[in-house]
Image (tube, rainbow, N blue to C red; front, side):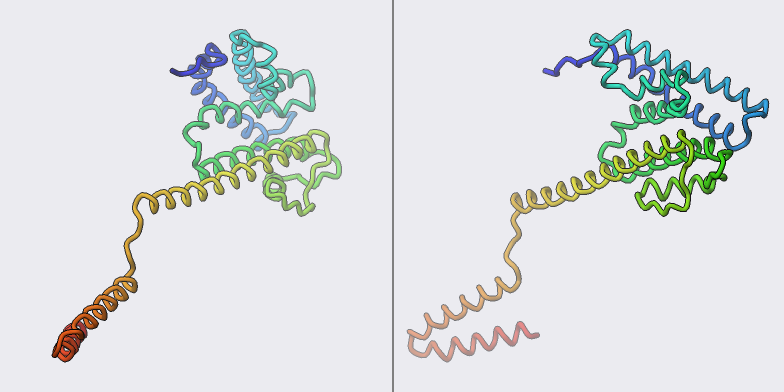
Length: 267
């Protein structure tokens, strides 16, 4: 008998809203990318897209509040969803504004968690691509107009993301603003978590393959090798010869028989 879920109403809510939130999250990411790459603060298009982002952010607020209302243990729910809480609280703290992008990762993770479980390549591709692209956009937005900034183009932001998430860290590009350093800290932690997860998954896969091979060999043991069969045949022939040598005239016949067998085998 299956165990009753801890928060059945919250899980039912998530099952109904995961697909829609994924579309909303991808829309947020697309609008944010266009805003950062194509416009700047004084442009009227920037403010129009910012309104769209605020509307999408409101959808995530409704989702979080809805799950909180449905949760039976509300404080436990909040403790288990710290990033969702920060996304809701972001407007009240300027340096947390970029955390609204975490909602994109959260909604996608809820949809992909079952489909990509155990699929190391797909998990690595989706996670690194999404987190890296979001981090590059975020650090480019906050760094490009900062005094003495070393990240002034999106290409430099992508290069900085690659060197940071792989823990190489050349130091030729680095954030100088508070927001940029906050993005860098999150990217460092995310990079370590992703690489650690992928490494563990690969190790688990190898262990499963070795275990499956051992189990197969235990159920279906391999037969004797050709060398072992040849040795057994030679021993049988020698035993037959020894047996025949006890009979008068059998020694010559046995030798002739052995020569005939060897000649036939060579042919």
